[in-house]
Length: 67
Length: 389
Ligand code: HEM
Ligand code: SF4
Image (cartoon, rainbow over all chains, first blue to last red; front, side, top):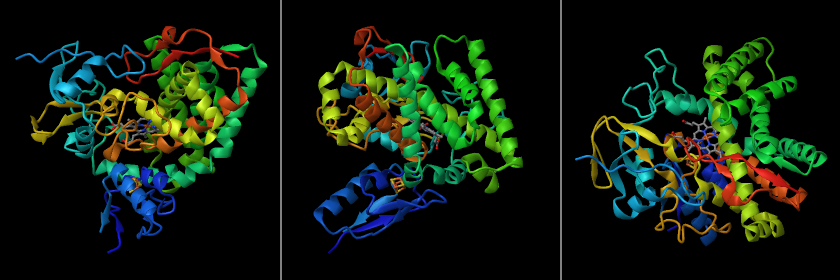
């Protein structure tokens, strides 16, 4: 089973921590600052590790991983 | 039973207050009292502070007289700023602002901030080879950056900077501080009126275009100024003082500028200057980490101590620029986590890199342990930083 990133925009506080952790996976909407997923399926171990870190640092607990 | 009295004063600039460290080991969530007799809960471990700051039943609304940061002027008619609000009003206001502070929006400011830092350093290098870095660099940079973001005309930068510096210096009297606050509030209110007539390409004009009422916008502009000015200035001064004190750290960054980003992140964790920023009022009986906090009691999340939690940051007292731990609480956590954090990171990164590159002989003009630190908050920092080159 592959890993999938889930972003709950209702909980996002727009701090952009996820973008700092992995700008290839996460972006912020220019109008409301909330998270936008560039892709939701990390493949390499490195991508999965960064997704995990983003989940950990997210101050809104808006991110999770489905595995 | 009277709870024990603990001190909130840092005696060693490189460590959290000793009482806080002791509590983290012995009684991580404790009922204590401050030297002035006010009782409160302190929360010292990383995970508990995060849980607390996520839970908005721990309220930020300072209009409630029971709130630890309540002040007499915050009556029923008082309009709270973003930092003093609870959801849902907080959520709506924050969403209307964060688009201005996204990582990509801010990276467009990089060349302009670089120019400002270069100009400030040009001015230092053109003068006598000894100065107070707080006045020459730490205070002006964040003030200039936020004034340009808000759309303050260049001709008014001096006025803006002088008043915001008066507001944060210790050698100004309360009257001078009060006057500076009034000057800035009035100035921003006038500026908003000017933007109503003549919109520009700036934050205030965009907020007006999005439908924010002019009378609501003044306080927002004022908060953006004060929340980001002294805080960023303190971090600039502390970071440079530390690098000049720990030469091997300075050399590490100078030899490998790519670690500047890691250095900034680690210095933010290490100093956690807004230590007592996380004051909340419990609006219900809430269980936190096995302790029952009752409605009406006040709670302080000790972010500085939490950022030295060995379970989260191995060897927490080591200043390690390769740690890259972004889960620190220097900017808080939860819905109020600092709106301007990525602007602060950008300013710090540019200032540190440029100072190291352009001022290779920079040194402390007084020994590190004689520097005057801001020991009694609200934010930790440096009053004066005499350097020479
Ligand atoms: C190193 C510099 C800075 C530090 C350490 C810092 C720290 C903090 C902390 C700890 C909070 C959370 C307070 C709470 O939970 O009650 C906060 C909130 C805030 N900060 Fe910063 N800050 C810095 C720079 C800035 C800058 C540059 C700006 C703006 C331009 C800014 C604007 C704000 C605003 C508007 C809030 C309120 C957010 C909200 O309540 O939703 N800060 N900051
Ligand atoms: S880290 Fe979390 S709160 Fe911040 S922008 Fe990303 S999803 Fe939103």
